[in-house]
Length: 275
Image 1 (cartoon, rainbow, N blue to C red):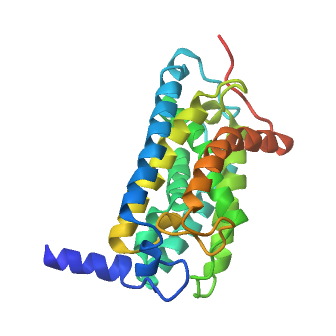
Image 2: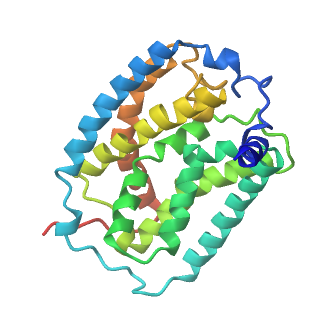
C-alpha cells in the first residue's frame, strides 16, 4: 500500500507548483475557513437536491419514442473522424499531465466532459446515452467559463496551451453540434422541457462543491478553482462562491438552451417529439 501511495503522489500531485498563483497551497486553502466551506456546500447541496428531485420526477424519456438517426445504424465517416480527433487531443492532455506529474487535474470537469463525449460516440445507441447526452449539454457552461476566463498560466510545455484551446473548442462547439445534427440518440429535448436542466444542475454543482472542493482542500490543490478563486476570476476574493451561487444556477438554466439554439444556426437539429 505504501508503494501505491508513493506512486500516486509522484504521478498525480508531486508536480503541482504552489508558487504559481491559483494553483493551490496553504494560502489558497486558507482563503476561507472550513466552517464557511461546509456552510456554503450545504446551501449548494440543498438547492441542487431540490433541482434533481424536480427534474427526475417529471422527465419522460422512457415514455417518448426517440427520433431515428439520419444515418440509420451505420456510423458516418465524420463521426469516426471526430472520435479519433478527440481521442488524440485528450491523449495529448493526459500525456502533459503525466509528463508534469499533475495527473490529479484530470478530474476537472472539462476532462470529464471529454471522456463523456468519447463514450457517447463509441457506446451502443440506447436511451441511457440519450439521457446522459442531454444532461451534459446543460453542464457545458463549465467549459464555456474555461473559455471565457482561461487559466493557462500553469501550462509551460510546447503545445500545452494550444491543446487547451483545441480541446475546449471541440467539447463546447464542434462535438455537440455534430452529434446533435445526427439525430437519433443525440436528439435534444423539447424547448419547454426544463427537467434535464434541473437534473444537470443537481449533478454538476455537487460534483464541484463536494468532490472537487474537499479533495482539493485535502491535497491543497485548487481543483477547478473550488479551493480558491482562479487568477482570471472577476469575483476574486473569499466571497467568490457566493457570487457563483447566484450566477451558476442561471447559467445552468439557460446556457444549454442557448447553445442548442446556436448549434441550430449551423446544423439541422432534431428535437424530441411529443406523443
